[in-house]
Amino acid sequence: MIQVTGLTRRYGSVLAVSDLSFSIKEGEIVGFLGPNGAGKTTTMNMLTGCLRPSAGTIMLGGFDIDTDAAEARKKIGYLPETPPLYPDMTVEEYLDFVYRLKQCKLPQEEHIRQVCTMVGLTDVYGRIIRNLSKGYRQRVGLAQALIGNPDILILDEPTVGLDPKQIIEIRETIRSLGQNHTVILSSHILPEVQAVCDRILVIHHGKIVADGTSAELSERMEGAEQLDMTIEGEPAGVLSTLRAVPGVAEAIVTQEDGKKSIYRITAEPDADIRHSVFDALSQNHMPILSMQQVELSLEDIFLELTETEAVEPEEEPEKKKRRLFGRKRGADK
Amino acid sequence: MNAIRKRDLQGFFRSPLGYVYIGAFLAVMNLYFFATCVLSSSSDVSSVFSNMLIVFLFLMPILTMRLFSEDYKQGTDRLLLTAPISVWAIVGGKFLAAIGVLLRALLGTVPWLLIILLFGTPSWSAILGCYIAVLCAAAIFAAMGMFLSSLTESQLIAAVLSFALFLGLYVADMLSYSMGTDGLLGSILNWFSIFTRYDTFMSGQFSLGNLIYFLSLTGLFLYLTARVLERRRM
Image (tube, rainbow over all chains, first blue to last red; front, side, top):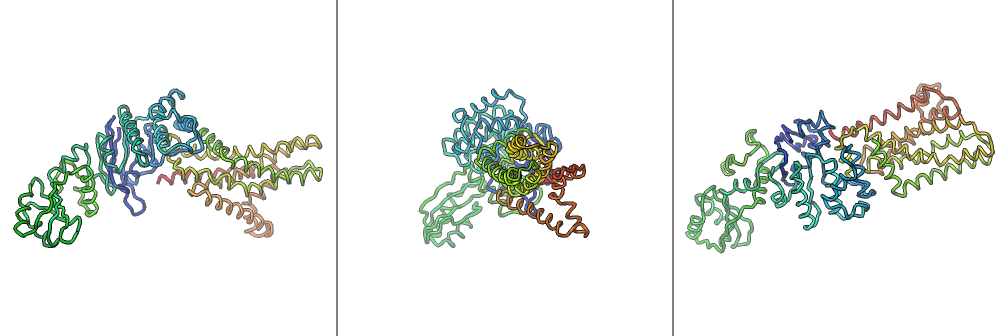
């Protein structure tokens, strides 16, 4: 349904999106995940034809967004980060306007009513958009994207600024939309992507750093075990002792507190270091006050992926797109 | 195109701005009409119309400032740019909305014709010429103002820029008067002056050259606006 190859976008000398390639099948719900400024919005703007890529091609349902613009745009419904609403119109007038703007062929009244029911707008149908709450405005924005029943929905941070109840409602709406539409949504909120999407693309510094289902992403990190420990002793001495233990990949101070600092120790893949760490510390008379195994959530994976990228801005070309089932992270170093 | 025209026209009259705008225009113009036609019992409206362009010079920036700047600010330009329509439809729709407001303002001057009809003998061809001329000249201002509005997110900056441009054109026109048409600069300024051409139109001389000038200058700024929209995708 969506085929993107070599997508690149420069703003002056800044590279916002760099050589992005991916394809999305019909009916998939895909989440773009990444910290702010990762290039999610830029990518979405290019997918919708708001912004022209510096290089690369985008095919939407077989139409090139650049050469077959009108046909390709008929395939997409776009909800930008701030919903594109005219505050002086009523919901009804606004949706009528969008209907005519999109040169929709479906029976007007019936179609608009259907869309309103789908996103829960029937109560505020006659109200002026200016007076609506943020949650309702977001829904009007979503309704706007749905007018014309496009095959592809592109939603840029659809739940931003909503209260928890509204977030759940919007998520449910998106999930139900996924039954008949191909959906791309962006977010920097992990549970959201986890809850809604079939597939996650982690984007950082304009590149895809991971691609897979949320289960696959977690699996990828299972080898690297981490411990949080409170240890009594001089931090410098404790660190050198920890680092000397075989199987320890990295040890850092997470919270310095005189002689009782908290450390985070990362093990090398598939190594249980608890015994050897205990032995090493007790030999050096550094009592362990607490030891806890860190459960890696998607959140940690996300941070790991994005932080690693930040310290390694220059990569060899073959490392550009790290596949989930490729090398383990530890092996990269 | 029609959807955008309708929306923008509606948007203008949703706020008090539309009514204040037309009210201000009619108040000033009625005063002119009263002073030049009613008090001196003249049925010649051309002097009223020749002042009308000056009034539009002040009022046009307020009409055109919102055309694109407001969309940029609200983010609704995204909606327009992702719709399956060309930039020409967007530019055309917005321009026609501005012209629609102008027409409504001009509609308010129809009572003058009734007054003249009641108390004098109107020259219909001259009056029709006046209306066409003011519409053509104001269309240039509208296109220029819309172009400047497409350059900025701020309505205020758009209005100030348009006002500066219109006033600059007016000053250039006055300059061409004082310099005469003997010198090169004077004749160039004179040739380019919207106001000089407008006055020629007003005096009852219809010239195809003038009409082409008005239409092509309007077209030029519509084209430039469309280019700016294209550039925003770059």
